[in-house]
Image (cartoon, rainbow, N blue to C red; front, side):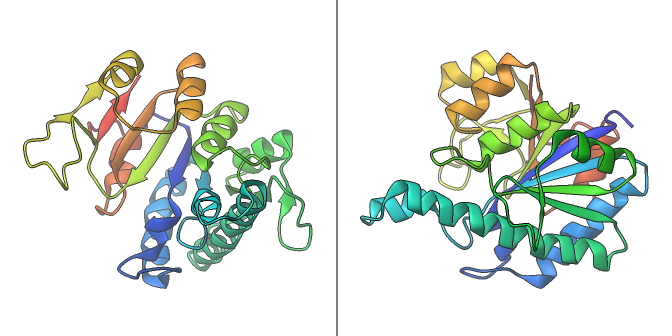
Length: 234
């Protein structure tokens, strides 16, 4: 396997499946089966998941809500998604731990770096909820931060498209897909891979990002095995 320890970044919207909001149990089950293929190979898996299927702090702020209050609601939404994913993984016989950046001791462990690494070394999947624990930071930033802290080999960003394009492929049929691209080129071309804070943090720490289609069966295992799936930013 090309990578031994990965951080998988999923959006909250990914859990909706074909629904307009909320969580699709079938989609959760599909993701659990994909992740199990990795753990069966001894790959150490950490996950950061967004909360956009439930609530977005930015959206709340645009409607007159206090931004800090809205972001705290968004953090709680990521914990809800983390609990749902934890349940799906454990139904697939994958030992899992949920750690939260905001203390909710009854449902999740507090984030402790050494404990998280120890869980990974013991073969447990670790889900990081609660974002960074601070308002004004996205779950993209949380994903990069946690990946650096646990010394992950790569960030795998699962999306509904099969990589990074020169334009939105759902709107522009002439958009060209990149197989590999540098951090510098992404910035020069103004491509939106992650928010600026997250992307810069990844660049400064030489942490590669692979953007791929999470909904294509087998993609996750192929990437970890070294296949050229999606777009690699390095």
